[in-house]
Length: 345
Image (tube, rainbow, N blue to C red; front, side):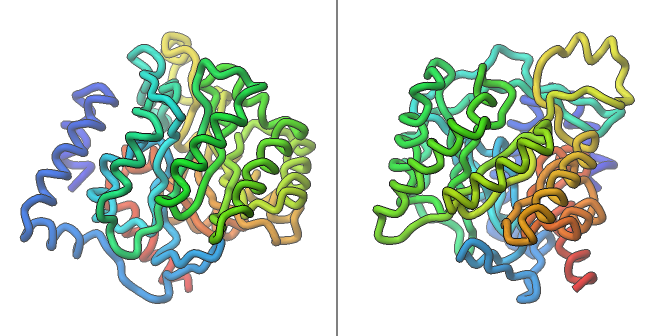
């Protein structure tokens, strides 16, 4: 249904316009009680065998919505109807910022991929907090993906992460430290061992001062070398954060079916979707083996089918997330992944 009717219509619009129209349409459907009930019953798979207790949290199923889809927490009520076991909001920064100039999101249909250079566009942490204070769907885990403002120098970045951590702490179930987006100048420099250890140690110290601690995860790039991945394992052990999300988008443009002319016209940005699938799985497998299976990993990157999700789980991912796959496969992807996990159980 999605590929036959809705996808061709959505692809008539720019990616950002299609994103907005899709979410508006979903909200309209869910505002009608009968349609809402039918919609949820169609997309949701309820089975105790899907439950996962990871990071001390009870996930009703292991399939989540990756950060970037709902940056400001405007749509998590609606997206919960699509059968997700958890939803990650953000990336959010202390102050609202408009992000990079449009166009900044591009489809690569020949590769079932996206390129984005959104630039952490969001309304800021206070706007997200206001929305999270409202009633949340039952049994839905919500993560908060936090970052720094574009104009904050790296030597002061820890202050931005601290502000977001403190503001969101009462309202999210886990945190993700995003130092791996390629679309904020110099942000990836924070992935180096010394600054990253300092940042995560600070957040863990703040975490340990709370009566009830929250899991802190690190989102890493797929472009790290094996040596850098070794450092990540060491840093996780030293700081005792809860785990890693592998991986963010890539700056690589290798082995694409899309013409080089089009790639050049698009320019800079992070590549997601099928082209990052193999590298993301390699990173998961490497981290899992290097940590002797002790590192808790959320696998994301190029999941466009149930088989892709199962591959990441087999590589060592405890949970998985999707985003670009929804654009090309539609909302039924979440249900199909959960059904495949049940079949493999």
